[in-house]
Image (cartoon, rainbow, N blue to C red; front, side, top):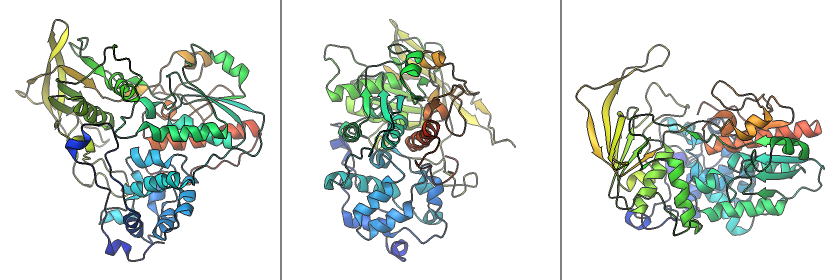
Length: 488
C-alpha cells in the first residue's frame, strides 16, 4: 500500500484549470500541469482498505491500489506498466471518463476520494514524455485476418488486443480520419487530437491497418467482408440520436449535437472549407436541450464560438449535491456535476419540458416550454412527470442544439446485410463471448450495449478481442477484465 497515514495527512487536490476568460479564447486543454510531488501525495491517500471497491467501480478492472502504491514510491515506469495491463488508452480515460472508480473508493465514504483519474492520466502522459510507451508488435503472425468496423475507443481497443495476439487487423472507418467519437465528437478542449494521433501512430507501427473513408455496407458489402476476413467485429457505435418531435422541429436552426460538434472539430483541424457554411453560435442566443456530457460539450463549444446568451435545459430534476439514501456507497451516485464548461457561463435549469418552436421565414426564433414537477418514485422506482399549471414560458433563440442521447445503432447497411439479431432495445445482440447470431461476427461497445462511457467501450473492446481470439484459435491468452463492475 501507499503511505498508511496518507489519507489523514493529505486532502484531495486536482490540477488547477486555466482562467475562464483565457481558455474561452482557444481550443486547448484547460488543465495545467500537475507536479509529480503532488501526484505522489494523492497516491499516498490510497488506503489499505482490505477490499478495494475501486476495482469493481471500474469496468476495466484497473488494479488501482497497485499503481497508486508504485506512484507514491516514485516507481513511475512500473506504475504505468500496471496501468497498461488493463487499459490500452489511459490518457483517454484519464481525460474523459467520469471516474466510477472514484465513486467506489472506500475513502469516499467520509472524505473526498483518491484522485484516481488524474493519477491515471498523469502516468500515461509521463510515459509518452519519457519515451516509455513504444510499439509492441507481435512476435509472430497467426495468418488470421480480422475486420473491425468502427474506429472509436471500442474498435481501437479490440484492434490493439487482436493485433498483439498476432492476427492481422484492419479497422474500417467511414469518416475521413480514424478515431470515431474521439475524433469528431469530443471537443478539442477536452481531448486535443494530437493525443489521439500519437496512439494511432503506435498502433500503425504495431501493424494495425487503418482504412478511413470506407463506409462498410456501402463501399464494401457484408458479403465481401465475410469472404475476405476470418472474423468481423462490429464496433460502430450507437449513432441514431434521440429526437424531439414537437411542433416547429423542422425549422432551420435546430440541430442534433452530432451535427454541430464535428464541424467545429474539423475547423480546429483545418479541414473545414472556409467557403462552406458552418453551424455556428457566434452572436446568437442558444438553447441546449439535454444536461449530460454531450450537452456540456456543446456548452463549451458555443462559448468559444461567441454565443451572446446560452441556456441549458434538462427535463429531469436537479440532482442532489451529495449522496442520499437512493444512491448508497459504493454505487455510482447520480449527483450534480459541474464541468469546466459550466464554469464558463450560461444559465442551467432543470425540470423544463420543451413543447414547441416557432420562427420567421423558416428560421427558429422562439422556444416554448413549461416547467414540470416529478412525483416520488413508486414501488418499482418509476416517477411521474406533471406540468406545473401557469408555468409556460417563451425564450428567444437563434440556435437550438439537441443533446438528448442516442437510441441505438443504425439498422441499415452492414447490420441488415449481415442479418445479425437485435435485442429489445435495437442494439446488436451477442452472447457472453460477444459473438452475434451470425458465426464469425462479433460486436462490442455502444453498438452492443447502447450509449455508455468510454471506459465501458474500452472494456468491451478488450473482452470482444478475447472472444474473437478464442473463436479463431480455440484458446486465448488475452485477458478478461478482473472485476464484475458495480452498476454505472
